[in-house]
Image 1 (cartoon, one colour):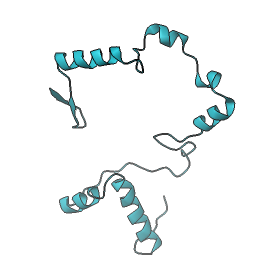
Image 2: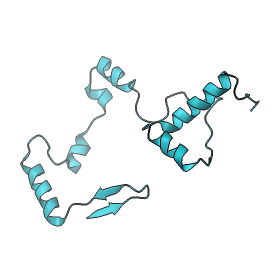
Image 3: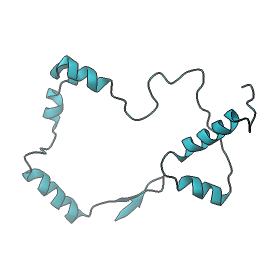
Amino acid sequence: MHITTKSGRKVHMPSAAEDAAINAGIAVDPDSPELTDEFFKNARPASEVLPPEVYVQLATLRGRGRPRGSVAAQTKKQVTLRLDHDVLAALKATGRGWQTRINDLLRADIEAGRLQRTAP
């Protein structure tokens, strides 16, 4: 069975038989034990169990989302924009990050003098 999320993504939901087979496989795999309430009760933060130099490196890795410290005077603004179907299709065909590429294209036009920068 498939369900569709709000974003339109289709997600496969296993049948009862498939779910039972998955759980049976998990049960016999020593490398993936079931995480119980007891496990979480005994869990400790990484800062307590890792060597300090390893923890510092892990803590400074950049994850998903907005970069740390990026909430500055010049943040991006959300806008609604109507584009021709073929223009939008061409931009989306370039893959992930197409909205950032639109921003880069417009910035290049401003810097080349094809568009005038106005005061905020």
